[in-house]
Length: 542
View 1: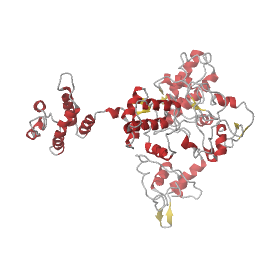
View 2: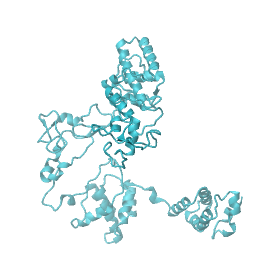
View 3: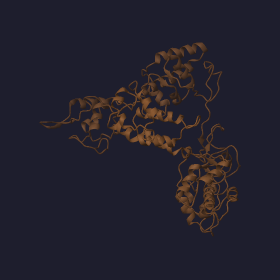
View 4: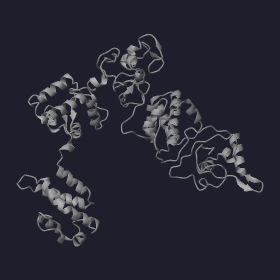
């Protein structure tokens, strides 16, 4: 398709149906006439609606006549009119009121936008003009102030029409070049502003003498986290203003700027031909050139060691593999993960099996925990050996400075019969190093009951759930709940009958009169061991 450059079915004009609709709706005379100088157009996206009866028609634009194909005279008239009065792209074109946008993006508003809407009638301007004049008279503002504020108010009202909103959302005032606070006040008094849950502020400075009409300004919003423009480190919220972290500000005091030989960025202060974030990788670059493509992202914290980053060590080249001989990388105490996923411990065990014989290397804290765990467990006992090995693998891979998730312990023990989980979890729980998993401590009979009830339709499931609750409260001794194992025995005998009632007998409720007439109670055994308890049958009859 030459107009939208999209592959589709074409008619005799060489146009697809969406382009035919767009040509008629937008009065695209160049493509209606098939001129050679006509430029391609973007693909027309239609969601749910149509242009109208005429625009959706796929009839050809050029119809056969005695002298061949021809186009209506009106298209030539439209073309001459369009070329005689060229109009640039629309600026803040008014949209249909009440539409909900799929998404919103920040607008770039400037002097060109203000000039484009000069003289255009804007809805709501008369109400806003009266408010501006009242503020000017009340506080003795100058005519220059009135003109500047009027420009911004007209611009905000044009944005309101372009959004198709009855009242302009307060957050969109961020896009105004200036005077956002006074525009907020004007639109609020004119009833044309959709207020945010919390009052917003658009000026970063306190100017009480220049803005007497704002008696109680909204507080300044806290500084959001941002990235350093030099090293890309995240600067936490609440730190000093600017987009350069403190270490990079000191690094900029050095002389010599240019292009970093590692990351390729230009205009940065260099040392050894490397910027500050690439400088620690100089030893790795010499030993492993492939690592030139990677850089570790960091968070600029207010505390810690100052000065440049320390060089990352390379390790001894005489050992078989540097990564195989050192402990795994551990998180520090108090470090929170960005996101958590279940670990695949099979790859960890495969790595340990391919490593040299012997126990994996541990940190001093991890070794102390393993020795404490194995102190009263003789090495000749195989079951004790598997417990110690489980703890060793966990501390080797995760470290001893952070808590271990109980799910990780059971996932590790599940893939190897020579590993155990329960004693290790007890040991870590006593020392406050275990993050328990609630799902692992749920009663298996209770989980079976809940799964069975979930398979029943409502309201039968709710009624049986009430029965389970009553049975739970009637234990063999006063004050003791009935065990889920006994309730499961009852429900397992009742499950086939309940399923048959709800699927084939059409039972919708165990308490409705219709269900009592259609419920074959005689099929339910009379003894508690065979089906419903006697007190349950009586309560259902009620």
